[in-house]
Length: 476
Image (cartoon, rainbow, N blue to C red; front, side, top):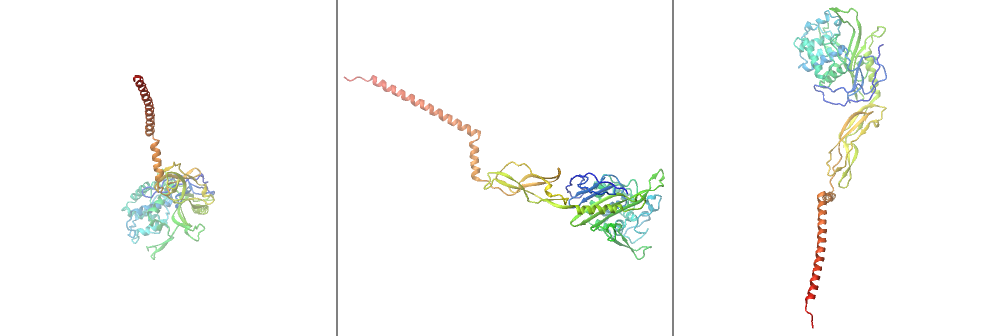
């Protein structure tokens, strides 16, 4: 059997998360984790939908053939364009002709036993026939009726929708995914398409996760008939049954032919299987895309390797990982110094939000590094909720997230300390110091001048007194 090893083991996380509108979140890492077992599929992309963390990835951007997983896009375009799913549809023979034409890749296409010119079929019937029975004729009927008989115009809508969503390696040349060299996608792009459908249209999962559906009567089924899901992972009697799996779309091509000049290569090529599923249980939800698992083993026996891959990956993910809260909202992460605070010289800094992530059960959450900002002392008053930078959470050197930090509580200024500080500030200012120096220099100069002046005046007075004595007449 063909197998492929997973590679690139490192811890890198995708932060999620933006709202899904015209663009889906960007892929910034191949995978956060890696299973230890071999997988058959050529392309793999598995995401934990609770955290948007990619837990497994292999060749996510390699162009591969989608087979009937292409019908996910057919379903999506119908959801975006059909106004009334209870409306009757026209089952024109144009919707069936290509399966009887000259393209051997379209022979023996999977179908939901719908008949040409059947008049009692609704869009709703076709959507179930498309998604749980993989009816190729249902895909064409939907396209024919959405675009007023122009199936090619519907295919154009499929490609425009893929571009709108953000797919860069996807192209559709038909509505059903039967082999065509110009119909291709990637595991990552198919994830984008499926995720967009899940998030934007609640009815999407209703159509693709049903176990069975009762179809209306037709010529060959006058009493009506029931169609059943092709997904063995949803069948309790199957060895691939996995509790919690919901839909989404199977796909397989047992053989395909390539163009050879104006004809076809008569030697059939090996086939392949693709599968998109979602699993939700035990409080965790995963979306898994696998493309091009081998249809045959080395002995030429048909396989169900896509189901094997999905079952093993879900068992691995649910046993290996758990979601842990790394830090809570309003959790104190540091203290900062406060200047002139009343009754306190420190204040706490807290987180504005909590953060949880998916990590191996064996990994202690303390392995996640918390990097706090360097903060200079704050001068009171300080308002509660005042921003103080960001907390950075890292694992093995990779940033998981950043969380804004704020002041935990209000700090009132110490009024006495405030005025003391003002006086000190004023008294130590250069202008005041200079004035004081000038004042004391002037005072000293004045005192010195006055001292010498008084001394001189005293001397002069003494001299005058002596002169008066000398000039006075002597008594006889």
